Image 1 (cartoon, rainbow, N blue to C red):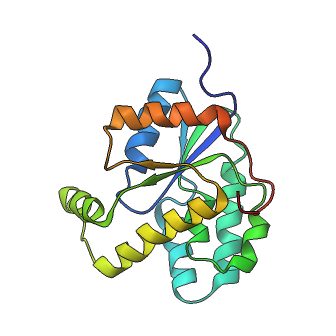
Image 2 (cartoon, rainbow, N blue to C red):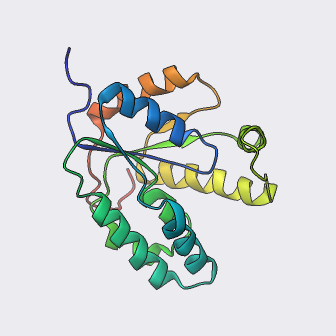
Image 3 (cartoon, rainbow, N blue to C red):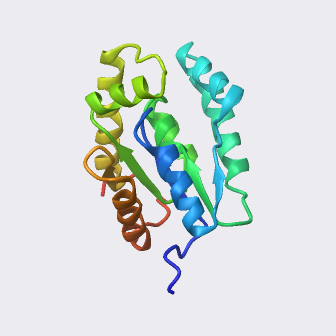
Length: 180
């Protein structure tokens, strides 16, 4: 069988409850890849606290160092979040610092699906307006920067995996932030 992933790193990014973690798990199982969550746990909380407090330089530095460390994987890896999540909250003047950007697919779901999935997971839904903002923000950034979008609300998990594997051969590192 032909290897469906010619590279070492694939990033799945997107808003909360977009299906990233589920699809990362399915892809890693199918491909024998390592799962990498560069902003998991207290580190992610720290980054969120910093940008929420307007301390963008510090948030950017901590997040880039975490991503840089995570990018050093020696085996094939599927990432659960990366640069696109930070681009939703960091000032655009900081984005160039993240180059090159690893191959990325946006996992996207509409606001209704997002809220329903959070409820099913037993997590607080929180502010619907915030979800509307981020669901839109991710999509706008992905379209602007040429990141393919997989609508996880419109397809089964297995169909999403197949779609991502179909996209993979055409993905590469972004070396500029020019619109595609």
